[in-house]
Each structure stands twice: as structure tokens, then as C-alpha cells.
Amino acid sequence: MLKKVFRSGFLVRSGHTVLTWLITLVLFLHDTDLRRFEEQGELMQPVVFSLLVLLSVMLYFTVSLMDPGFILTETVQGPLGASEDQEAMLPQAATPRLRRCGYCLLQQPMRARHCKACQRCVRKFDHHCPWIENCVGEQNHRWFLLYLLVQLGALTWAFHLALSGLSWSQVGWGPWLRTHGVLLGCVAVTGVFSMVVLVLLGCHLYLASTNTTTWEFMSRPRIAYLRSWGDGEDNPFDRGLLCNLWDFFCVCRTVAWDRVYQRAHRDHI
Image (cartoon, rainbow, N blue to C red; front, side):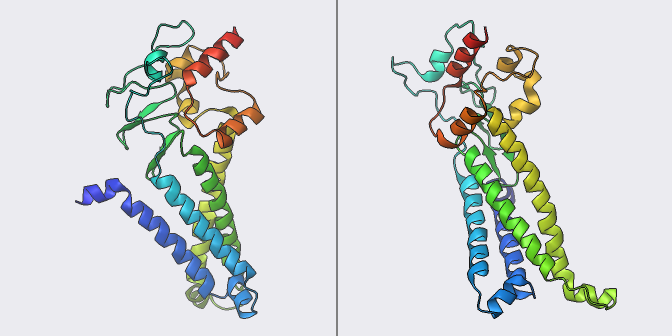
């Protein structure tokens, strides 16, 4: 029973939600800028901050619970009656042969990978994120990046608010810690998480701008379709900064990456 609860991600998601609203409650109850604005009748900033926190929680659950691009079948029919994956398996000099997953036995499209944590293959696999207890893949990667952006805004604002409640009076360390210990904890938590989210956001913006994934970036020498492309840093899926960002944020359909690879191979030659 406990193993099932851990696997479902219930504890991780519950812990994230409880911690988020606990810090928000502390910021409202202590003598921070939020409370001062409330006492002065200026409700704009408290309301906007609460909505930002609510948006971050909603995006968290959206990314955590949505399908990242699981491959459930290989029977999707193409225009000539053959599946897209079967069509890609036809002998083509420009495209490395796709492989069948050794775990779920499904034929993997290009850029897909099996996730041992989710026990499924994921299209355009990026990584499995223990923070959201879900994979980041073709269908939820843009939402993951948007969540990081909103979360960074909420965390940095919370960090500033927590600092505003620390008064540096000339009292001993013992009384000062008893008065500000909880706020000091909020400063530490929001500060550390702000740095982590900032690094993650920067990394994923770079990945989006180059049309690559964390898995491809970290494991290039072990990936057949990248290894056969050459030993350099060229990426067969890179179409330039603007096109990459447009495709990442605005193209919501499933992409046949083997065909993109073939076109890039012809242009490369």
C-alpha cells in the first residue's frame, strides 16, 4: 500500500502544495510588506501575489498530471495505411533504423526513450522529474518551462517579502531567533529554491532555443541517430533560434522526427 502511494506521487505533490501554502500563510501572518499593505487597505499586491501562487500551483499539477507523450500503441495509420513508425522503419540510408523498446516492446519513434520510473516510452523524452513525479516530454515540455517561469516569479517575490519582515533590532540572538525564526526559514527555503529554479529555467530555455533535450544533450555519444550524424556539436533538429522557439511554444502536434532528420541530412550533404 505504501509503495503504491509513493509511486503515485501523492506524497511529493501533497508536500509541494502544503509547503507552498504554508510559506504563503507565514508571509501573510508575520510583519511583512503583505501584512502592512493589508493594514493600510492597499489590497492590490496581496491579491496579485496570492493569484501568482495559485497559478504556480495550478501549473504544477497541470505538468505533473498531464500525459508527457506516452507511446501506448504503434497502430497510428499514415496516409498510405502504414503506421508512422512502420514507415520510418523502411530501409533509408539517411535515417538510422528505429528500435523496439526492450522493456515495453513498442517500436520507438526517433527521439523517444523508455522511462524506468514511469515504465513507459515517451516521445521526445527530456527527463523524468522527481519534483513533479512525471516525465517531461513532447506534450508537456512547454508547460514545464512555463511553470518554471511562474514558479521563479512567485519564489523571488516570496523571498523579498520574507526579507521585509526581518527587523535588525539591537536585541540578543536568542530573542531575535525566537521572533524571526520562522521567517528566516522562509528566506532560506525560497532563496535556495529560487536559485534551483533559475538554473533549471536557464537550461531549458537553452535547450528549447537549440531544439534539443536534456537526454540528447547529456547522452549524445550513446544515441544512434546523433552518433551517426557526426562527432561535432551539430544538431540535425536545429532550425535556428526563432524557428526553434516557435516550434517549441506554438507547435502542439506530434512531430515525425525521422522525416525532419532526413531533410536535415539532405541539406547537410
